Amino acid sequence: MKILLAGLLTLGMSFSANAETWKFASEEDKNDVQDIFAQTFTDTIKKESNGDIRVKVYYYGQLGTENDIVELAANGTIQFVSVGTGHLGSYVPEVQALSVPYVLGTDTDVVRKVLTSSKTIYEDLADRFENKNLKLLTMISEGEMVWGANKAIRSPEDFAGQKIRTFTSTIPVKTYKAFGATPTPLSWGEVYGALQLKAVDGMVNPIYFIYNAKWHEVQDFLMFPGQQPYVGTVSTNSKWFNDLSEEKQAMVHKAITAAEQAAHDYQLRINKENMDKIIAERPNMQVVILNEKERARFKKLSSTLHETYYDVVENAYDDAEKAAARKSAQELLENLIQEVEDAS
Image (cartoon, rainbow, N blue to C red; front, side, top):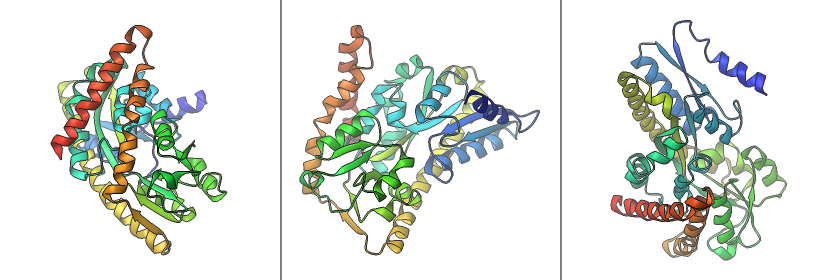
């Protein structure tokens, strides 16, 4: 594995004898939202540097797991990394506030404003990122998280007895347990077979990803609960970035801005297009949009997950720091909720 990794990283240096090469690792694959971000970032850097800087993009699994690529960015082996908040939260647990359901909601403009300009995230937590040798550059929505199942789910009672595939981090697992389901963490590569063989009953992901992974082929119902988007994050190695010239730092920020816009536009388009494809391929697919009363029940249950979030943050610190970390997490979540309300 180490030989393969070394070979892949060395390959990224062979574009040109004269070109400087930056490495960007993503948890997703080609044509996913994070890939559009990475490719736009790459093109912008190439243009702004007149070809003197190239960016080599690594896709899902090429450099290891999601947590592996965050570690590679933190130790400076690669310069940029994009992963969901749950995986970045292994390093900076506070960012998992964005994984708590019904905090961000699903209003496109509100979500984007908070994800790109939250003082709570980008300023108040800057030192926590620095402590891990990371710098958060931006966050992106990849679309509303949609429930898949083989029955309509409109209430917590409907989740009873349902094995729902979740991400492997604590908050998603606790979320679906609170909602009444049996959470079943699986790597995404295992999900199609598990749904097909009824080892799990349902899953949760944005529409574009459900279609790309072909999970719609083995589900009969799709539910829109207005719960939250899937949030991707883009970070860089802090020491490396701080050592860049002002010109190169400005270049990075310009490329990040262009890439965020491209990813935003793409996710809006691809989620709609892939929903249309799902209906065309599965005309009997039942689409359920929870009404306000139905959402309110799940939102009320979600409030119990605030304590789960505080626990996750507290448990990430040494005993001497636990009380302060828990208090900080509570302030952060409250401030984030206020930012969402102010942006609404």
